[in-house]
Every structure is written in C-alpha cells, then in structure tokens.
Amino acid sequence: MCLDEGTLQAYLDGEVTKEKKQQIENHLAACSHCQSHLKELENNNTFVNLHLTTYKKHLDRMEPAIGYKPGYHADISKDENHQRKKGVLAMLARYKKIIAAAAVVASLGISLSFAPVRTVAAQLLTLFRVQKIETTGISIDDLNHIQRAFYNNGTKLNIENFGKISSQRTGNSTQVSWEEAQKALSFKPLKPSYLPDKMKMQPRYDLEPITNINFTLNVKNVNAVISELGGKNLLPDGLEGKTFTLSMPQALHLSASDGGGSDIKHLSLIQAPSPEIKLPEGMNVDEVRKAILDLPVIPPEVKQKLAALKDWQNTLYVPQPKNGTTEEITVNGGSGVIIKDGQSPLTLIWQKNGMLYIMNGNNISADELMKTANSLE
Amino acid sequence: MLDKSPRERFIKKDAEFQKLYKQYFAIVFRHVNYLLGGQSPTAEEIVQETFIRLYNSPPLTQDNLSAWLLRVATNTTYNYLRSDKRRSAREEKVHNLNCVRQEAADSAEEVYLHNQQVLAVKEILELLPERDRMCLLLRFSGFSYGEISEITGVGLTSMGTVLARAQARFKKEFLARNGGNS
Image 1 (cartoon, each protein chain N blue to C red):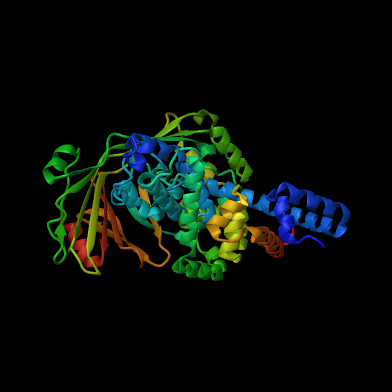
Image 2 (image 1 turned 180 degrees about the horizontal axis):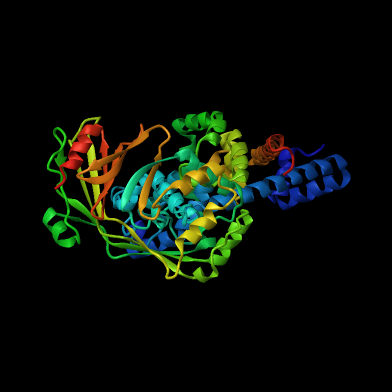
C-alpha cells in the first residue's frame, strides 16, 4: 500500500510518531513511486517557504500607526482612540495627500515621506515654513506614480537606511478651558463668532504641546539608493550625520457639533503657528532638490510640473484629489485652499500672519464653512 | 494567598502590565499583520484586544507568555476573518484585485504592498479558502499541527492532506501567473 500525501506531508513536517516514522521510512526505501511523491512535496514545501518568507519579511517592515511609545498606552483600559485622533499631526494625517505633495515639492524628502513609521511627522520634515497655500495641477495620481516608481525599483527604501528619527514632546496633550488656553498659548487663540444652525462649541479645548522631530541623515546610504535608481547628482558628503529638526509648535483644537442625529454636523478647527524646519548648517537645499528631481524614475511630465513650482520652500501645495476639486480661497485676508473630495468632510486650510489653520466640516456646506472661518476673532 | 484575582498572579501592577505590553507588542503585531496580509489598522485592533484579554483574564502562569499571546491573537484573527461580513468583503476584493492594483496607493500600507513580490504572494493566498490559507500561514510561522488544528478546527489527521494540497495549489497558481521564472 502506498502512502497518501497527507501522511507524507506530516512526515516532512516532523509531525508523525516514532513508530510511524519508521514504517514510512521502511516503505520509502522500497517504493520509488512514494520516493518521487515525497520529493515533489518537498519541492512544494521549499517553494512555498521561500515565497512566504519574503512575504513575511516585507510585511514585518510595516509598523503600527501608533505602536508603542513610552507612556502612550499608559492605561489600556481607558479608551484612547478618541484622544489619539486629535492634534495637528493627526489632522494633517487625514490629509496626507497634502503632505505627500509637500514632500514632493520640497523634494528634499521624497525618501523621508515614505517612512514606514507612518507618522506624518516624518513626512512633515519636508515643510520649511508654510507661508503660502496654493493649489497645483499636480494630481494625486502623479504623486502615486512617483511613489510606485520608487517602490518598484528596489526594496531598500526603508527609513532606517536613510537615517535616524527621534521625537520629543514637551508634555502631554491636555484639555483646557478657554481662559487656560489663552494663558498657556504663545499665540492669541481665535474662536468663531458665527456657527451654522444649532451648532455649539464644545466647552473644553485640546492643547497640544510643542513637538520636535529630529532626523539625522545617513548620506552614504541615501547616495547608494540614488545611484541605484540611476541618479547622477549625489548629496554632498558634508551632510553626513547632520540633523534636521522639525518643530511643531503648540496647537489648539476646538470642535463644535449640533449634538445628534444620524447626519450629525461636526466642525473642528486646528490652529497653530506654522511648523518650521531647521536645516543643518551649510546645507544647500537646491542641491538636494536637484539630486532628487534628476532621478530617472520620476516621469518627465511630473518632473516638469515639479520643477515649475515656484517658492517651493515656503508653500504648501495642495494636489488635485482624485474625485474632487481644490480651489484657492481667501479667509480673513489669508490665502488658502478649500478641498472638496466627495467622501471626506470638506477641508479648509489657510494661513495668516504665520499661523496655520485647518478647518474640517462634516455635513456642513462650503458656504457655511467659509462663513464660520471668516468669523474667527 | 489564594483569593487574589487571577490578574494578580503575575501582573501585580499596571507598570508590570505595561512592561509586558512593551515587550510583546511588536511580536504579536507582526504575526497578526502577516496573517491578515498587511491590514495594519485591523492588526493593531486585534493586538489591542489580545492585550485587553491578557489584562482581564491572563493565563495561569507567565511561562510561555508569548505562545499564549500568539494563540489568542491568532484565534481572534481567525474569527475576524471568518465573520460573514469580512468574508464577502474579501471575496469582492479578490474579484476586484486587478482594479485594486491600478488604484493609486494612498496609504503607507498600500505603498508597501505595491512591492511586486508581496502582491504576487498575496494574490495567490487570497485564492485559497480561508481555512487552507490559515493553515499554511500558521505552519510557516512555526505552529504545530496540534495548535493549527485547535485554531482552525481542521482535524489532526487531515492536516497533512490540507497542507499538501494547499502548497501544491499555491505553487501551481503562482507559476501559472508569474511565468515560472520564480
């Protein structure tokens, strides 16, 4: 009697008893048919093992959005979902498309923006100081094109290959009253004097502490990747070990809602001084930008569009969402963009006097949202 | 003392719990993320759930805690995958896979999955029935037949057959789709 595949498989996997093992080996010694069957199963084993190992290795590089941070999960029994979705970083994360654009525009950070540490923080590294917000003809597809080009070209694009990231928070986010907010903030907070029908401000405000994120460049590795991708302009050796610092200033988060129903109206507003990046001394950002824009993996038409962006160091460019539109607007004399993207709530992002404002509205019309934004005082 | 709550057997303080959390989070997360094929937000939720389980009703001893955590997490993952809603969503996803490929990668995980090799493997895995896929994935992350049987409900005596067939199918489909070069 020949052995069935299940028995042979179990034998291969070392899942048979000693006696059974002996029996199987006795049979195998005398049966060429079972020998070749075993060989086939063995080949399948090796084949699957090989592919699953690669697969697992790639998936292992993904990191959880939150992961472990000291003190972060201080008490798992408390629901922190609610807390952790707030804050400027989280808010911007919802609009990671903007950030992706900024990344490309500042181009310094193409590599940084794909950090598997999904923190927007790393992506924000590419913002210098936002002084202007404008739309651009670059579409989300263009950006994805670039991302894919990078990803299809090798597997070395891991943030650890480019340098080290660390972050420091100067405290925890806290809930404060309006008076406390005014006292604690380094800027004068604004509140809307107009709200759409039946909406009320939440009485408590979330105060986000200053956060600094440091990124130290490993030039050798970055250059190796640039060469591998066919680029000719390498980063200067002088940047080795230099640190970029991104400062996210204090931020205040207000929200308002109409309190109920299935089509609940919700509005939130983040205000913060524009984030700023400190570059290492002696760094020529144009050099870095050139090194990245010259990479052959970036499609020529996208390259042209990128190169055409003026004042890229100080502007947050908002790309075209896939199923929506962006439109340049003015809020209280500050320039900004309104993003209408079908599924997500309307987003209004603008800046004025060195401050960055992001307002989101769920079930609120664009007119109402604009009216609310204009009523800030 | 015998009347201590189960938790106090080895997790006496929240600080100790936190230590365990810190120690095992990454291991459990990677395992679940692998079983789910890279749906990291879901993986995170399942890991959270696993640790809540540890907090509320921990095993009797701390011996082999990682095995305990992995087993609980695996069970939770498998239950999640088997829930009807999920399954239909998944089937639809397989159906739309080609469209999905065209879709732009909006999020970090998708960007990762745009790696061709990973996509190729994922595509084949999704062709396999839930049960077979789970057996295969668990086998290659070092689970024994007994453990896999406990989680998936596949009888111990059929495990070899299920695995042999799943592997043969994996190889066949993979070669058919990828031109036999790898």
